[in-house]
Length: 386
Image (cartoon, rainbow, N blue to C red; front, side, top):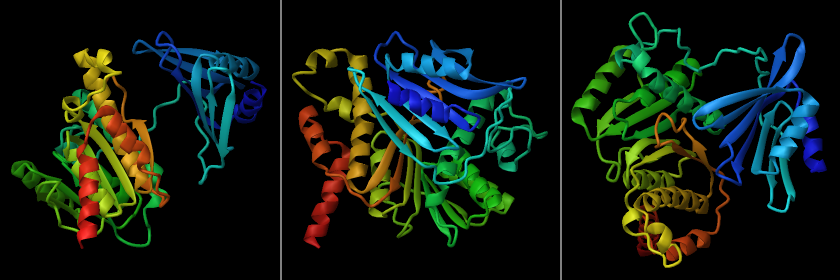
């Protein structure tokens, strides 16, 4: 573990943004442990936040003590991630204690963190600042205060904007950027995207919200016109048949139900979209297909089968996207305590396609044919016929 200690001594300083320990080897351990630098008076310590049973426990550790505690924790956890002014690093520890470390420099300037002990949570949309669309959508009062019952929605909106902030370098600042929000619903995130990208960041954008509910779309149109949001359009339409644009820079889906997510991802791939942000919902398809003799005893438990089918669905979607040249991350959208539908698929087009043979083997192993795989196969056939 000496290599790990050396890494920690380089990163544990005031420039640390966050350090996260995850993937425990035992279910009895805390789901994750995170550390951040904190100034107690003039003394620098590292506050460890340990998540267990929906509660968070804190410990303040001095630098040497923090290094040794982390090394000890990495005996029972598999993964460590560090993000700081120095750069980014990931450490993976095998069962035998072998440590694999990957490091890279951060691609942009990292803002130094507020090291005060009781620092206030910073949101992209500040909770004290009145935003018209948040008032009309019932998230803020007319005085600009967050409605107590809508605080989870406010956090969800800000969390989503954080994901967009991360991918800003992928969006062109020299031309109009086209973004399509499939299944936009009441359009909390659609309005938030426009406000953030156009009003706060100055991007030229054309954002399209698409949904099947005519009354919802009519209301969204009224609000967009009321705010003078030119470049924000709403249409009634189905994801599978939508042909309103020929090129899209970013595709967004939030809780598009079951295979609607697959149709949205298929469209994004065909448009060669630079960025995809997708929060799937209600993955029933594979649950009715999944079959495997080895896993049959596990699948005999309905709840376990349902959850495994949902996880396999998103993992296969990610593998298909990688086979099309996307760099894919599966991320936690918001805390599980707020909603179980908390997985976000973030894909950025990098052009380096991964061999699709791996996911094809998984399909054979599980005896499944997910919609996204079928749509992509159909696309191949169409190209060959052409």
